[in-house]
Length: 200
Image (tube, rainbow, N blue to C red; front, top):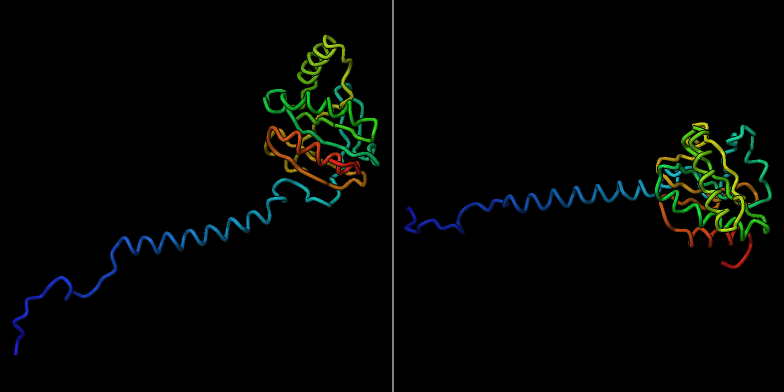
């Protein structure tokens, strides 16, 4: 016997709405993305070069005058390796603060080594000459920062991809801190003081 009942919407087989299916797919994708992000963050230090606590890659680079200077010559000092270029605005902005830090902390066993990425001694010489003139106008004299020219391999060993790129090397020649991008000079100074064994 057939039913007189007229089918209603509620009698239809229940199908999942496209919105519900989409929400499930998005949730799964978000979960996978989260796992990948955690994995990437775990390897973030590797992307930024040698890991903290590991030996800093050795190098021997030339000054703009052609003199060879090796990282090993600074053993026993706390060293800031500042990878920079004259066309990099944040690099240029950071320079006076690094010069001031060098002047203040240099006598306590600290050295800033600025490694220029342009590999053109003429360009670097011109830039540093203008900086020297500006310092002399202020009665400050020559900068005590050691300026070197990158050879392409050194910046690669430190995984330099963004400027400025700063690496702090402790008295034992190990990486103590890495800073990528502009600003952060107070944070850098705090790490320098810690590496010098002083209160930050």
